[in-house]
Amino acid sequence: MKEIRAIIQPFMSHKVFDALRRVGDLPGLTMSRVVGWGEADVQGADQTFEEGGHTFAHKIMLDIVVRDDLVDVIVETIHRAAHTGNFGDGKIFVYDVADALKIRTGERGPDAL
Picture 1 (cartoon, helix red, strand yellow):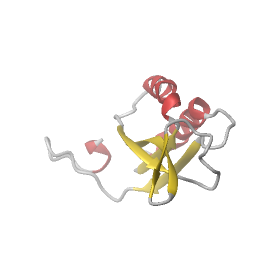
Picture 2 (cartoon, helix red, strand yellow; picture 1 turned 90 degrees about the vertical axis):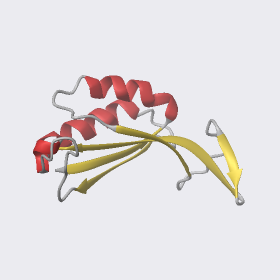
Picture 3 (tube, one colour; picture 1 turned 45 degrees about the horizontal axis):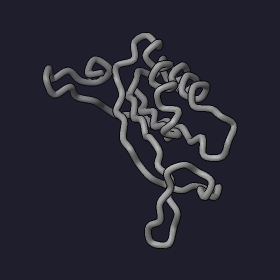
Picture 4 (tube, helix red, strand yellow; picture 1 turned 180 degrees about the horizontal axis):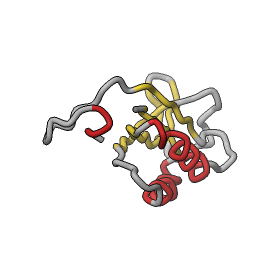
């Protein structure tokens, strides 16, 4: 199993969600509203604010845990849907997941997804 964490522009979230809904076997996702700054200056970004002398931009963070065979299609789907070609488009990270437990049923591993 892998966790895919994507940080995307808020204005691209509907496009990304629509694209992900069309992927078969997607078990679900978690969305968080986050703030951050990267290597490019965020001064031109929408919805920025100052904190502690730094300028932060609002972003959307997606966390998706999937079977290994779905990783490439999910990553590519997010990449295509979130891409504008501008600074601040975001990043996608892929992590190993050692185990999962579905609280309701007690299922473990990929069955818990």
